Length: 281
Image 1 (cartoon, rainbow, N blue to C red):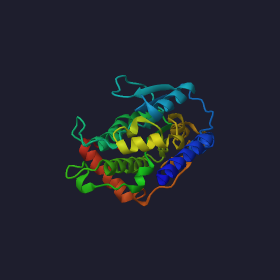
Image 2: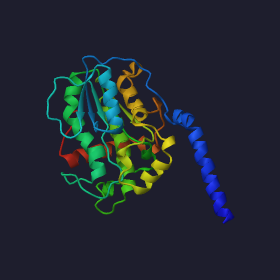
Image 3: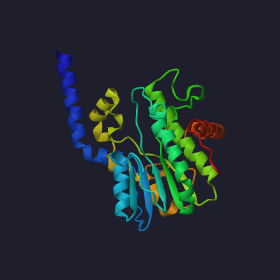
Image 4: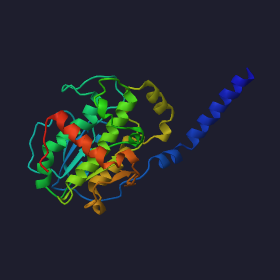
């Protein structure tokens, strides 16, 4: 009985301390803030997954800066004459095994292949609109991911966590390879890690949903999570910087598997083959 009382008392003390120091915890966990006051009047921005979370906050910020923001939450139905910023933001996380309409495993399909194809379709427009920027939202999860070329679509076996990490590594490799290909074109490509954000992304994982609820004070708000995407989209000092990875509005480290040029090119070829497209470099 005494042990139980001590445990409860300990939990109460921890809870009180978390409430007491909540403002400081939130300030620390918020990470970097985009300080650029750059205006985007006359510029056109396309953001995938902008109906909720960090995508929505990114769209709001860029719209306030004067940009024409196209929120590609489902299908892009309207053609545009110019496109200055493309933010590949949409994503799903740790969902049960299910396929997209094209027959791809959902996480790789939505997080990587969908953005790969969209960028392919828009690259000519971005080049004609240059200077232009492409921002790819990856994750710290790329550190524990690897590309399973022998079973890229998880048809042999499926683990929702590993599939998510693979898709986030694929985001980073895609951004780096595209930056290499576009070098000298005045279209820059950079990837970002938004941080741990309170969003709907963890809805498929009961454990993560519980943990995110318990430790919500330590997590970023969607607005905080959007800051690095906004920074890479507007910061004047990044106008010619390409092929880099950012977190908290600052350069961030990349795992060795995310810097492997051979893996990046092999994934590029595999993705192109799956989608039945040929890039005109």
